[in-house]
Image 1: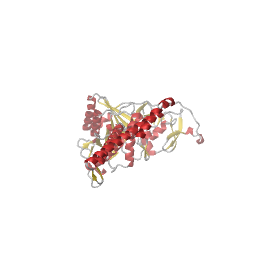
Image 2: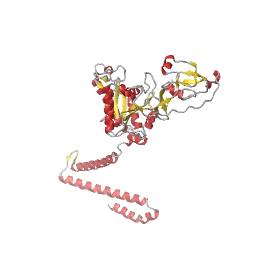
Image 3: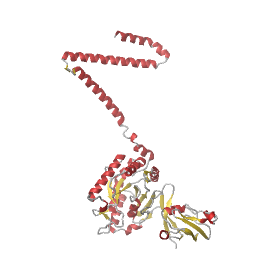
Image 4: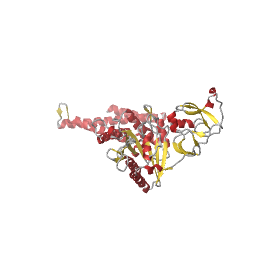
Length: 458
């Protein structure tokens, strides 16, 4: 059966959706999931597998797999869970012989696709989305780029699926995140929406700067209009990993990125609240805690909007069929409106690794204050010295001095200050003389002797 199959095209830094045409469908994803065939399988070399996710990525790298065709006739394949189908010819010990075949042409990026699934959304949702995008078009914009960031399991891929109303990103429990950032582009009403799905910014229990740098490379030449940073509402505190994730984003991508952030909370349901805490109070507490962590890392949180998200199929709907969160808020439209507002009022974020590193370095912040602080210290010392000298002239621990004694103490203090100044000047002349050549030092020697005699007379 001839049809189009949407796969994933990847290069060194980013994956794009791509379309391949004109091949016969072999084993579908559902058949692989249900049967989980293991062992040696025979199939026609003209047939190819339609497998999504990590298995498809692995197959594309294997000769004779889904990414290319083997020799003519039938070819034996060995299915290894987690790796996919591998030609049996690669294992001579199992009776196979290596056979060379023509190299498959690399898939081509599809680019922008029509937002076909927009028409399947409730009418009120369609109108709300188009109104938000039209506001951007009226401002002279023809596209919007949304970058989705967060730890693994917070619902980045699910949110993009809900936003586009189609399963473009693999999202399942206990499933590994995307290995690379993936761009999904949809066009509707003359406007293009780009959603960038990203892998988890954590590698096990540590922040992965390599993944963050990879994200930075993807958006280096693609200004980002808004960033959706996701957290889960059913988490009750900002723990160590949360703070390290936020600090990692600031350190690698720069504090400037937080100006474009919409803070999103997934799993926005009443059941996500702690016992005896109402929904509104819990949202406010979670928002305040996350904002405090962002501010501590050096990011700006003054105008940071907050969006509530519920991707579950059990999400309630209103009378118009729109998916709503507590408070009867249609969350898809609300999210896009807040993203559009950021795009209209904030300059797009552009990744500059040097500027980001400089801005995130605490040793480089507010360096212009250093000379002002030093000047203030010097002025304060001079003022304190003057106050203490004046106090010493007025009295001591036994009580205040009379007018004559105070006058004598001031005169003595003046003489001491003059003496200190004269000795300071003498040391400066001696230092300057020592720095001169020998001939010049010899000519200036009598002058130094005269000064010594004056000191003795004093």
